[in-house]
Image (tube, rainbow, N blue to C red):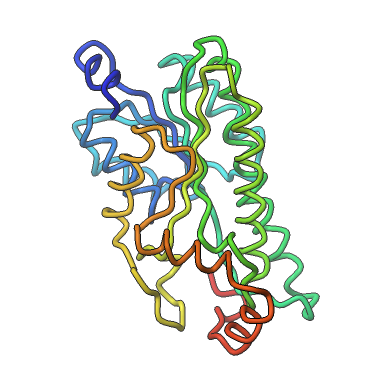
Length: 266
């Protein structure tokens, strides 16, 4: 929490809504905010898993909402309920995301391309949009998008995922500029490798791998400090800068034979 949030903690709990909350980074973020006494709104696809996870956060009682971020109406309903119960959210985190190995030459992968873009990009739009009226009225709040270092360059065998994360980074940047003067902050978070179910089956070495809880701690600190763009861990920050600077010819040679995520693997 930032100083304002800490100073008012006794009078008002910080209100945090996040998607993809039943596992991985989302669950770790929920645990971190729960330790800080936040009022949580948790949104995830799997109703049973979400309810079981929410029970582990006792004595806190988060609001829970089962739904898919691709479903605009489900998020609009959840946002309306959360806002009605607790007022304008202080922090809204669009965390839900999927990663599947894809290859352009296979028409059978088209559905995976579509699902990846719908979840990783449009899911952010669906998450933020219904919270904006109340946040604009309050002239306060933080919209946080979980992107990825994978969005810095196109990754072979993961064209859908890396392209969706590149789109998310640029969407968040455009939104950040749109919000200038509104009192609403937009924060882009780009994790490197984090130990979650999404990365569990990656058939290659994952440098600077973080536990989900460690990643969540760093993300919450970055949100509290109002970082516009944050890459974690710090080693990946420098690796990402180098990756962006590599000339195309060198990048192509370096990654042409890199290990790839199997097609369709989540």
